[in-house]
Image (cartoon, rainbow, N blue to C red; front, side, top):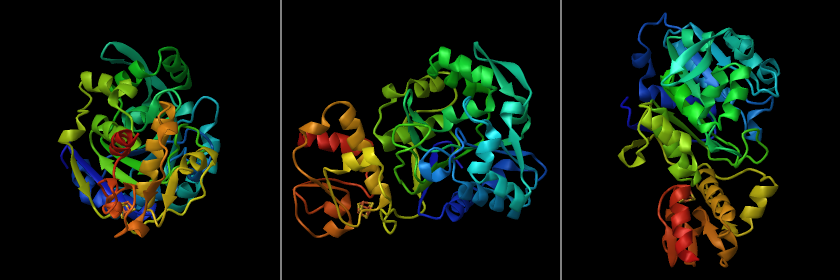
Length: 363
Ligand code: SF4
């Protein structure tokens, strides 16, 4: 797999989707020797199930475990530390990881209880947990979601789970962006498997999940996070740690040079969720008819960005989205299904950044 590749699969079965991405990436060739120790680093920031939008879906992790076991890799461990306000042991229980331990015998390592060493991360000294540094191959498994301080959290920020609590507190006093970038100079990101099933709109602790029904595979954490910005409608200036990380040599933030490999189509995976209050408010402008989650999720992220800038209230017309608009005419449409409309944004699904640009022209 090339550093510029981003492998994307749409669907509603995280276990099978994870296997498809790993097979397409030929991860077994990247790992090499069957005896190498493999770390699986989910996001279990809080002790809440994945459906709330905060934590990595255990079925996606189960898919990765099954794939690796089938390929003969037996030396696997889940490595994670929740945020300072929660105990990882409780997150392992609440998020379904103790069940993974029972079913597959996989070791669960709590970095809140781990030993650690100080590393020079290109000019910033950071303590990193031994368990995360001792693996031979790390699969970073973040959730595609919003964050109240950094706007976006995905691959780069997920590595905050491999530092001790005292270091997490220090990161906050340093403003997060700079230390996150420096941490990723040393922290391992051999492969990234992004849970884009239903990450939260704005908060890392969840509460407003937005189904996007996709899993993304990458080997460059900077490119991965830059692409997530496009999906959520943020510019790179909105998430400074991405460009910081690029300047430190962690990866490449130019998504125009990315090679998008979509393993299937978004259509066929229609929206079926009950929105939280904020998503419901944003949806009041939308007329939906058999919309796919991937498309609808992009629109919700776009509307949220426009809400933040005060532009949302300037949109006076309803916005149509969904396969039910195929062949129909109308005013403002989202996605290729609305191509007969007077004004529509192309894509199947379009990214939030494209929807924002399009909607700004309609104001
Ligand atoms: S454009 Fe139509 S088919 Fe494509 S993702 Fe959107 S709603 Fe689904």
